[in-house]
Length: 224
Image 1 (cartoon, rainbow, N blue to C red):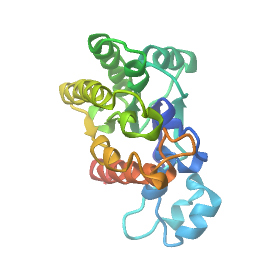
Image 2: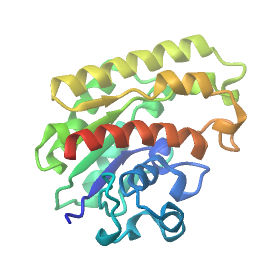
Image 3: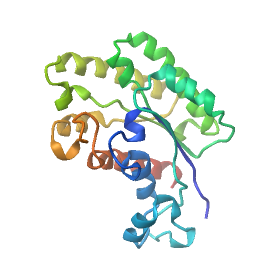
Image 4: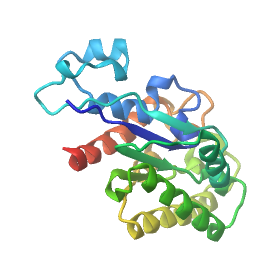
């Protein structure tokens, strides 16, 4: 059975700030895709350790552990520089891109973000062996709904996040990639303790499960 590869590009929301590595959305996505008949054993041993012989008849895949290029605080230009430094020389079956919240947080103009995001998406397509529909843009969460934003203008933050996400969606459509909207449901849960990490800003593993479920379901339709 083919072993699939997955590259996740982003910032704190991709690396999973304040949660265990296995709880971030790239690892949870792989877990869902590698679902076996013995799910508990798969969780204990790690998502990348599922042998092809253990793939369940209900449609499980064989994904290697995701490769992640992401660090808390990165903006689009910083992610781009990190990709340069990584000197990636191979292609991947699946690539995800979630970036932009730090551009918004630092007050950078949307037009600048649009230019840099388009460049990053083109690079993501290249890493996906130039197959656009193997690339998944994940929308930017609205940190303005979290307790961390108390005392700030949450309405303004939300409007700016919407503008950034419109860029993400339109650019994804322009290059025929997928757009995964996690922001709508994240806004519902963004001030609930169980969906937040201890910093009251970043998501908990429970929130990332929602994102991973959306992403995994879409990936299944592409490679299934």
